[in-house]
Amino acid sequence: MKYNKHNLLKEVSELINNTTLTDEELVSISKHFDMDPEDITQIDDDVYGLPVLDIDGGKYLVGHDEDVECAAIEAIRGSFNEFPSSFAAWVLCDAMPDMISYDSVVEMISNGTDKLIKELVDIDILADVCIRSDGYGPYLAHYDYEEVEVGNLLLYRVD
Image (cartoon, rainbow, N blue to C red; front, side):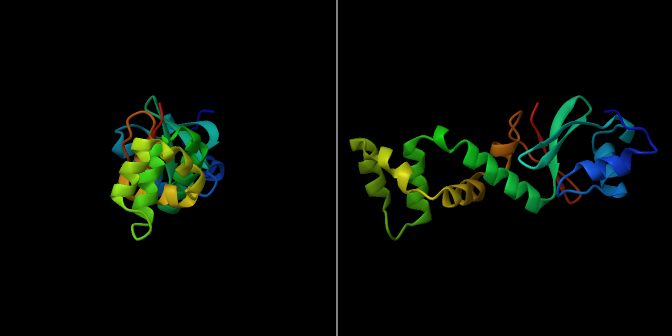
């Protein structure tokens, strides 16, 4: 749906689940991308609870920090089975350094027992460690892994 000047702010605010854009935020986004606010189009209801906006030909997830954190956790949960078991072993080592040592992880990987680790790692611990070490970008910005900060909004390009 294309927005015009009269309904743009109202409709974009209503479409965003937890993230409500203010007039200032929308103007800031349009200025950041050097474009008119009327050229912003919503293209999906949401991805991981964040709205998807077409901004100057690029698809972006948009949200405030707390909404973005929830979205990143959902993205990690959804892709947990794709994480290598050796990565899960490193996460376990990082999350519980008093219980499992670096040398133990190296030994587990070398003898193949790291495959069992994925069953032991709590997904929320994994998500926390991933976000602490890499930020939100790698899990939300599938296009370039970058985070764009515009005022108090975070934007992630997905296409």
